[in-house]
Amino acid sequence: MAGEEKVLEKMDEATTAKSQESELEQKLSEFGVSPELTDTIIDHLGVETVEDLSMLEEADLLDAGMKIIQARKLLKQFKVESAPEPVAMSQVASAVNMCGSLLPEIPSEESWLADLKTGGILRIDRNSYISAIRAALAERTGIFEVPKKLVDAMEVFALENQQPVTPEFYELSKQLTRRSYGEVFAAVDGIDGTFVTEKRKKELFCRLNEHVWPVLQDSSTQFKTWYETWVSASSNPANLAMVLQGLRGGTAALPPGMGAAPDTSMLRDLGDGLRESINKALAGVGTSVAAALAYDYTKIRKVLEKPDLPAKVGATNREQLFKKLGLSIDSTLVRTENNIVRYILGLIEADNQPADLEAAYFGELYMLSTQINWRALGLATDDTNHGLSSFTSDL
Image (cartoon, rainbow, N blue to C red; front, side, top):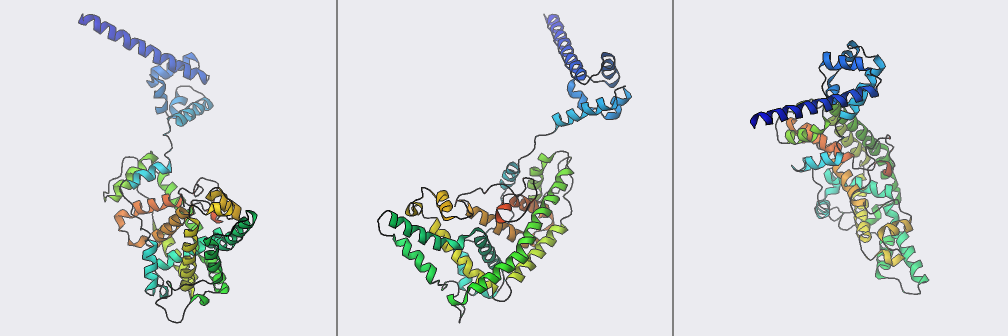
């Protein structure tokens, strides 16, 4: 009985070998390889299966007698077929986030406002940077136009439907005609809402456009170059998630095939340059104006968050409301703001990272940059998917 089983096993093995050889011959014949040359490849190169072909070099096939174009076409197909599946950035980001983030957290609006109340507008610090970028984003997306557009739309809707305007109409009208920054300027004598003139606002926006946005655009490009250099040095890009997790945990070992991270000095220089650029934009009375504008932005955003607001202008949802008001924003504004603020703080505070965590830190910062829609903010990018992902959260 045992003898019969061995015979059957040998028969199965022979059948399998014959089947594999048949597949191999068929694959080679697709590339115009003659039966004689096929025998040479099998006998002299030791190729037994189709998969074995991927282990050959061009020189091996040429030595066996294959023509150069045949050899290149064959190897090209196998490189494509055997290439690892591309790793989606979201997969890498998810794997990294399992261990928690190294990037700085954004303070809550309550904490931000509390710091401003204690005289925070008299110095340039992380709260100033947050104020500046919120103000710049609001200006780029037309948020400061919301109160006037909403007031007009509410009045038109009320007239069309022969009904009185809602209380929000008077709230917004007051916000338009009399801005009060008591909370922001509480700790500074001699300054009130009249200080934040249209002239000072425009000057701040000009300085932000001149000094800050170009640096941000350049940083996204340099991060992409740095990241791609790292990945191109690896035989398996899928290892990146493991690398970032390992480096974050303080382990120095890299998985096989994953080279050391490229030099990060240019990324640290970016952080220094960004800090200097924001300081230039906030020079003079810039911190005070930026704080007031950021405060305006948070107040307007809270109005937009009201679930019943669309109905008061005849819109069915917030997307339709934004379209009706002619605003270049969508319902994911908050995530856009949070990502950019966190990205800027991450760049500026990169010097605080210990050397053994630096690669993981910059890897995270790169992934965060890919979640920012730079083109929607008026910043030109290349034609790759970097920085062109859609906004990813609700307002």
